[in-house]
Length: 231
Image (cartoon, rainbow, N blue to C red; front, top):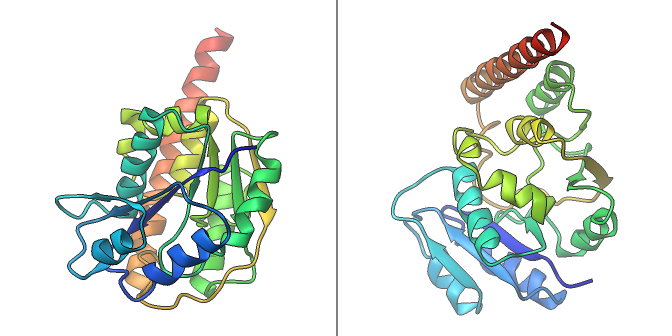
């Protein structure tokens, strides 16, 4: 099996991006794209010095839209498998092989680490597992493998309306009847910066309100379609 194309969204990750890229290249992964999300530090320069492709965005789009920019590029070049990988040092290159082992059986494979995170993170996971009914335990993991079909879906305009790479992406993929798998992987503590979602209770509150409305709207749309189909 060929090596997957790796997309790394990065915003002001100069403290960790070099270490992350060396971990990947030392494990044999060369086909890497760093999506520099309008960083104001040396993230892009360090990435280029590591010899990987760099896509520099003109202004800050946020983690999901930066990721989607990378997925759209992967779709254009016809990548068969794409792994999304964090730039903050949490993900390990050695875990990619575990995702690839399941890649032939599922459209999306999620690297799950349930031992990580704060009380707020685990509360959010519990609430949205129940609301979304997507059947994924680590809902906010950014370590994911998408096959070509999933990449095509996530390159669509519908995916541009999302704000986070978690529940919304999984709900969208389910709409297109794509299947998923989840594998347990180790993760390191974040080496720098703070979680966009879980750095404060205010951010958690916004995330939970946004994602709750997303789940409710998706459930309502599904119910309308079911009623129409039964009439």
